[in-house]
Image (cartoon, rainbow, N blue to C red):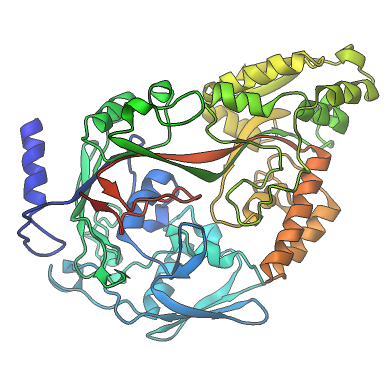
Length: 539
């Protein structure tokens, strides 16, 4: 079997997207995707596994750099109207789709024009496509996508929405060719045609995927055309311990994140790389736009809330003050991530401010005082409180349970399967639950939308049913503020309101960890944990 797979690898690497190549020194980047890939269609780029692969194959109008600044991509420049509702993009003239037979024969291609974006974006809205990314264009006017000519594309919004450029960086907003989509013999999800630095070659289900260098890619790094790699090889080993061993042997070039099966082998208790691997591996560690938290159901019109002690803000605040997040990170997370003492907006977000201390730190005496003020001195008479979580977070919840017991709060930790937990949270059947929010786009509005009254679940993402007129007013005002600094002031005020009402218990702001072989250069990282291989070099 191994010989067959090796033969496949060698044979496929003798071809580019369209023609034979004579590789004397193949630069192949290898990574494993234990979660598997379900689709290479940008319309279904919902989870990280799909997004990473799609990002190598497709481009959009704009893109994020490593610091989450919005940069040109297929659009070389753009204008935003004073009303904030009309976005006009001026496209490059040198972007071509990958060569594919859908354009008449296997060596054919064509230039990307503005009407391709009209088609691609309208396709995302098509109910028959059923893309999970349809919400991206909820604020676009009917017939709001316009090709003014081949190189000028326009989007008209219903109302001003400053984070919109960040939405356009999402892989849902990639350009696709109509010819490949409407070819009934072509399953686009498994035979994609894009414009990216790499083009699709082979996908053997559960075994491997091969992407090859796009020799006609339009982006340059100085005087050098990108990408530098000849190919990308993605394996699908499900067991993370096995994948780790392959990485250590040099059969994989990097691994992302950390699994419990090898956490203590790769990392010191301080969260640094184990010195025994320092001659072969280097570690990149940075803020990740993910806030882990505990949520309270706040809707006192529900019987489940009326009968709960958690309806009292002082009890919710006592829980927030009652455990040491810093110690939790050191003992349970090897200091991967930072204690969430600043609110819901995570580190790494442009509007995050380390000096805004409206969150909660460890103050057990304050926690006891709040309990006494609420009528439960030392916790006497306070009913047991149930916290619902999944098995993956049991250690953290058990830690919080023990810490809170020291101030007089009795917590029952209830472990629920992930699917059941999600359903019960969405149907408002859980008073106190573990949650997390990974940013879809690099703007704090993405987090603050979780607390807008109009976003009550199940129609929206407001799982806590938090409601505040002051918050909602600031939320609406932020839509009309194009000045980032002023808008960030609104965001921070909204975050402080959430914390004042103790609608949630922020636990920690996550971090991206990338373990990379030392012969790999230029991989880097970013707070969205997006994998970008176009500037990667391999010695």
